[in-house]
Image: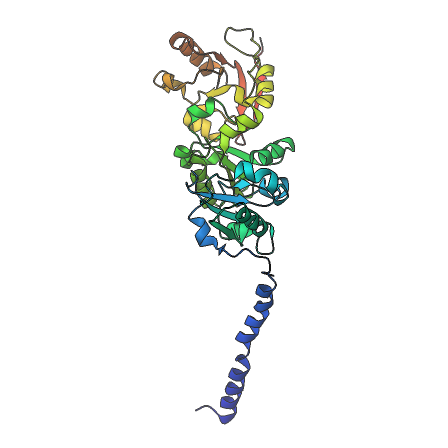
Length: 371
């Protein structure tokens, strides 16, 4: 039997535990009370309400409006499908960007519960006659905290390119479509081939990845982004407006200027290196090695059609851009060139007659053959 002293000790210990739970709640209370709700718009909605309206393609009958500044906040991350009307530019942009239908659902958001920009814009929209207005008070911080994939703008992608950051841009469209035009520097991992070609992604899973495809009606980039997150990549975003908007903003790549080599059909190593450095999406690089070789290392953006499948897949080769065939030594690439010249007079084929070392990171080295 337990002694009276041990029973008394247990009772005293239990009594000391009683105030702990209320103390924790009291400690949490100031954090909630720190949000000053004065000036908030009357119709507040939460994550679950907003989630049903965020989709690509954008759902009809609703408009999501990000009230934050463009370059500092909206461009690096926002809810997919939303438009940007910075509060300071509301009077200028609202007449152009808000819908003509004043009964359409408008959802404003900004930088969380301490941000008043979305509330201010909601009141302004109400004065303009809009009748179905909500404010997502949790805003963008709540959206990403709930595990949702953010979207970025074309301007932000261009900035990363100009600053040469380690961002990796992934085109989720089929290889044939990618070959017809892509954002400079992008690698191609068709969503339908994601599991097979995921090895093209960087080994460092903290590397920023941005997936894009054929615009706001294309779901491929969103699907691929989720697959990358499932693989453990922690810094994943989409560019929903994709290649169509990119060409509007920055144009398509200029035509490649390939210098002919000494042998018929070849281009020089120097010309190839320059094109791949400055205008990679102005050509289509076709790697004719076996799939196993290609998987071990291949030029960024290249497509793989093994030479023993070339005749069967000849019709899949895109026209409109020069085709450059590559392999390890030039032998199979030259064979592909001969086949295409014979069977597809509508194409502009070239090949590299040199020793090429293909690296797993997408880079390559060329050693000209001694003549």
